[in-house]
Image (cartoon, rainbow, N blue to C red; front, side):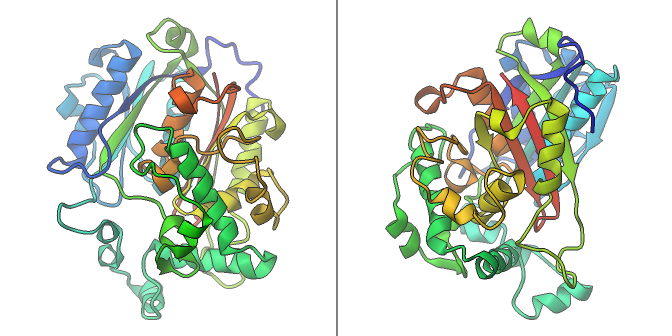
Length: 392
């Protein structure tokens, strides 16, 4: 994948707007309603009008409900780009990539990318939102389910246990990620959980799927997030500081749960990360802030290894080293609290925080050096990965 460093700045795509609805235990609204509000907020944030939008990319969580009819709900006409996308948690990065390619190819000028979901139901537990009752496996997956493996908790736990057996990674080391991200969340007024935690709290939280404790697992949220992608020259004249899209890549390894697979040992991040950095014309050492997909603490650890922040098998030691991940650390990671403590909007969680940091609008959690940001998305059971390199 070639570098885009020679592409004129005015031609490069940039993120010009960010729209976020209220998120968390917000009831009485559909995913489509959240999506429409998020797009309107993103357009307003950019200082544009809905009529300026000529491209729309939509995505919904496992509950669905957001589709191409969002165009009519928003009253958008004569769109030059319209699509519904789904690669699970990696979709946000893929959407920005598709929007950027369309803009740089002259297929569209202003593209709204939106994700929304409403899995929470009043009176029902958060666990029920993505619990086994949502899955009706058949065929080979049905046979696997008879052994008790059903839903993401079981399969991600299996991946984490394999890493532990291969490299000696421990539960307490995973807990260091949860503790560091909660430290960031305590500075984020949008975060759902802001009370500080320590390793003892992590270890004493109930077991969800061994080796995962409750504090190893992401929150569940209702809400929506949208971004506006446009040309760099246009973004520079709008209401917000533009966030340039320097590089991107996807990786879809396939083969999950097949004989001799590498589940838990390597993910698509190992391909997508270096490819996105090459496109951006930068190195890992240049990255100031990392916003990594964190459906589970282990997802963060494996992504850190696969991106090359530490050697394979040394992720546990890396994340437990004092002064690395938390506020004031050498690698500011998931600075809003991520999906573990703030809000769960699939890949739009790390993407939204990266935009806020790049703009310098993060308040008490603002990272002083925020020129280059690395954003990851992960979908399926490490089946899909997307990487973005953004620049303030």
